[in-house]
Length: 432
Ligand SMILES: Cc1cc2nc3c(=O)[nH]c(=O)nc-3n(C[C@H](O)[C@H](O)[C@H](O)COP(=O)(O)OP(=O)(O)OC[C@H]3O[C@@H](n4cnc5c(N)ncnc54)[C@H](O)[C@@H]3O)c2cc1C
Image (cartoon, rainbow, N blue to C red; front, side, top):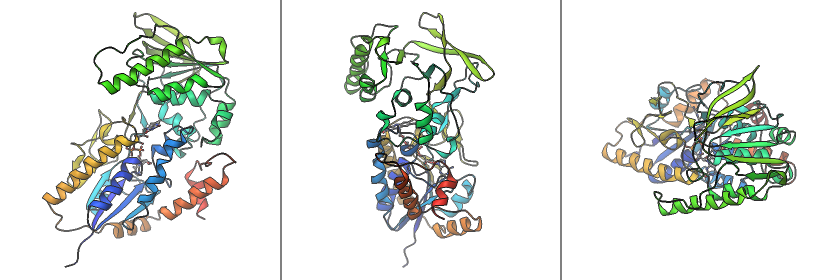
């Protein structure tokens, strides 16, 4: 008897897509996995979100690349589902479809003035300094003296750190050159990191918070509150330990004075953004409300909001508009379709959290296949290749990506791991 191939399409080559490709290619006998991405590059937010000076974190991509050495896993880059191939077509071609498209759209700040030009969602800004083709031309306004960052999580810390570091401190990073040049030319003197809640509730992690202690030109300050000494009740022991460490770091920062260095990072707790004033696209003031209900005017030139992300709906795919995720029940979307990662559970969790999530989804898929074996297999990769060929899509396979990646490494100046191509055309030009 001929064993039929179980064809699997995974849409999105971020951590979730790679974890699932690895698991399913191993666990489902006679499977063929196509890992599809809209970009010619791989790795999702590992390449386009993780801060460029945290190169150690980005090294996980080497582990992901090993998955593509398996005979039954292919990369189909430069193929956008919903544009080049529809969701319904994908379902008709593959036995199993898994959506791992992440959550890359910025949540709206939703206050008066948030449509001013110098207001940017963190996703766009982070993508800009990381050289993502969608936002390479963002050209953020960095020629003022004062910048506000809304949100008390690690993304806010990343943004503050990248803005405050000197070019020398960025040596060894893979920041895109256009961003490095713009940041080096920036005239910023005050960065305000603004949170609705207090230091105990902030979702910083201690290593990232602690990085500001030793910066060349930036001094971290906590001026408007007494930093509490103890976390108090209500947190599980590990979480409480991290929060306690945050308090200790913030207490050290509270002992700093503004004159110490030319750039000041102000941690402003217990302040909620209420409105942004300005004209001709330019911001003049950020209006905040403090915990006493008083209005506080903060003169700022540029504002970044790091208050979360939404997934982008693919036409025809079940979508939870309110939560901004793929509509799903523990990873199950509809017959033959599953989801995992940030687009399944929302934009929370570091890279390893997606592994645990993907393992759960893989178990669910395998259990479903055992309960209801596929009677009639679909055409899979062969039909996909035919369709993409008919549509003249220049598919970027793993070998192509290796060439693009090597060209990025080769053109980088000494000491820099790579100089990313920031447009799809540049990437494809490498392939001739
Ligand atoms: C600014 C920032 C910094 C972070 N820093 C860290 C850190 O230091 N350490 C850490 O552990 N975690 C960090 N994280 C979290 C980590 O990046 C996420 O946990 C992880 O990337 C989520 O993986 P994912 O696969 O679900 O989504 P993603 O990584 O977003 O991958 C989604 C992929 O889907 C592709 N895609 C989207 N739509 C389509 C479509 N229609 N067709 C085809 N392909 C599509 C995208 O191009 C992308 O490659 C950070 C996140 C952000 C936002």
